[in-house]
Image (cartoon, rainbow, N blue to C red; front, side, top):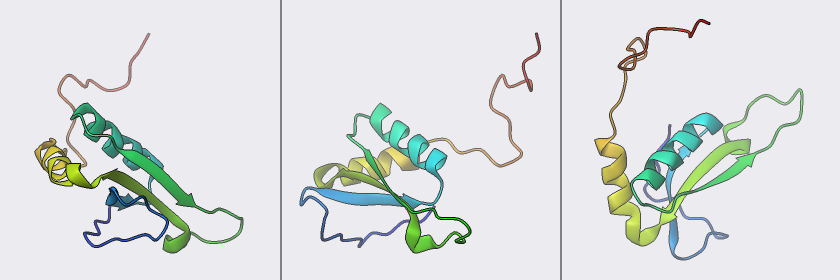
Length: 100
């Protein structure tokens, strides 16, 4: 995940700011969902361009998470207070794949 505190976009509405930038659409959805569960109106903007066999180029693979400018500080607090898991850590109650 990439954080850019000074990101400005000439096409962006005046009352919104980029909170986070990622290359992973699942990560973007998780971040937006976390923000929305904290009462923040978060929006995702995909700037992904794919044309095979073009390799992944950062400038053509960005996904931006936008929040209202006035809610930026609260959004940062919501993300900072979110629990994190180490890559080898399991969620509580996670016993592995479900079996029928």
